[in-house]
Length: 276
Image 1: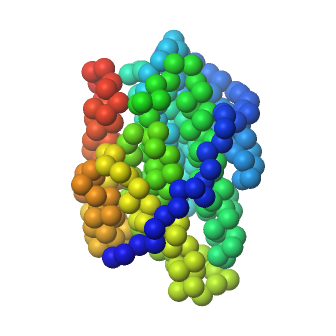
Image 2: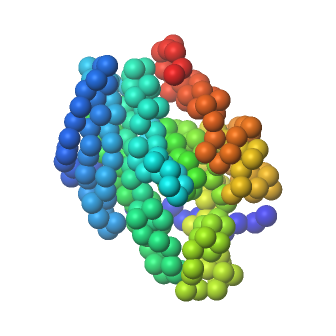
């Protein structure tokens, strides 16, 4: 299927790391977790957790973006906290951002949603600058990880940001209209909405992967992502992508987490360490 040609210039990179403040910090078992607020650009103040080895030092980095699941306690920036803590023991610095659309603002119309999607990706570009501004973080070892809507946003970021060397997508769908027009009441007709948002659809932005490695994680019992959609995403991701399907629901499984960490460890050149 043909997709609109994406335009990475619409997400201009900020010239420097955004202003940020530490609202709280705790260190335990050799890992420091800082609660941050940073300037997300037009989207406003953004929240994130910065998870890093307490001893500091240089190393690889991961930008995590969470899923949406009504009623789930991890439907926010806490989703990857345990994973990031484990990776910090292997020298990884992680930034876990909080999303806005559709977590804090509901989708409603073409103009509203297009604007917020663009602002969300601009926020992510500021998050990249913040992460790379950390002392010693290696800009050649930066990975993005996203689940569900978080994965959709990370796909656009990956296309616009060549400094991200690899991408992990967990149970995303191909188009914003796949979910927005199904689960929310829209002011615009579904066909008009889908056509207007098509230039921002994640499946189109995968064309900008440019051979960089991608891990696609899908679920055999996913009520939100069909086999056909998963296959379309895998095809669009190209030869640099590996697609794996797990016996799990949309939330995925422990097996998927172990696979994800091993795959990232190889690409981030992490020292040997236990998975858990």
